[in-house]
Image (cartoon, rainbow, N blue to C red):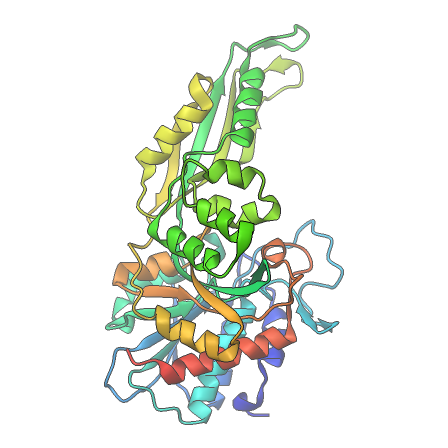
Length: 437
């Protein structure tokens, strides 16, 4: 079987069988497999490493030299499965009930399979593109990209010279709202702003009840973080997303969505929005989620200090000072607040390719509605943005109405419909045909 004959589904099954759990990653065997496929197809590639077990691959199909290159990129590392109750082993790539199951099926070996399949098809069919098509497969995205995208941007920027647009994660998957099917194309992402709260108290012997100590303060702080959102902010991308959805909905539902963009009403509407609040809440607020707690050294001693680490995420256009100010207003004087790590995100999005991609999706699914999308997480796009490259999260998947995409990413029983893989590969290939720089 030649490289061009491998279906996206078969390719994904192969990729899933490489255990690239990060940490430690060990992506080398997976990258070498892809390199062998490219070589068999007559495509030269480079492997670039900061760590021998964490390689990155770059390959190129030459275009006509009439336009800038287009970058296709994705990562092959995955998050751990430890402690998760999987129904199907996560590294066997099994097909069950029309789905490919495995860690990385959605994030993002499924996307890599689509991008790689479209790239191999372009070579096999002799697709003539105005500019080069560059494929980049990366290690280490799930731990910050330090051995992956950040390393390439820092040390091998020349490989990406002239590139203005890229296709990568995380967008293009369909979701249903009301009676409409939407395809969110990611054009912007939030920023990492990890934060630490420290609560202090007098300490003392555990046999003596203590009121108002560090534990009491911690309970009040956590209660406030649970029940009080940070302030509402309507960024341009969030407004465009809300407007795009509202325009397709009629009656009370359309009115409710449209009113989400009114800061005076946003939080009250989110409180009654049910499951829909999960979509809109993080794109309308800076957020800080408590994820780690450290305090106390002995069972019979009241702790004098407790540290809570928060996974803070900032909207585009905001910075660490905004996080400090907004968090202090919520936690009050019960906790000291400091920034642990800040990783700036991309600048305001360049929307120059959006209509082309939206048009490709409309052609593939005339009933679907493409909309711009602000991702609540981060991707390697923030690293490539330093080279002036705008990433579009564009891994199209036409998903069943009851498929809960967000609930399966990084979770047990991660899986992707076989039909969605085929759909996405065809849409990406059409995008290569229509890209004009």
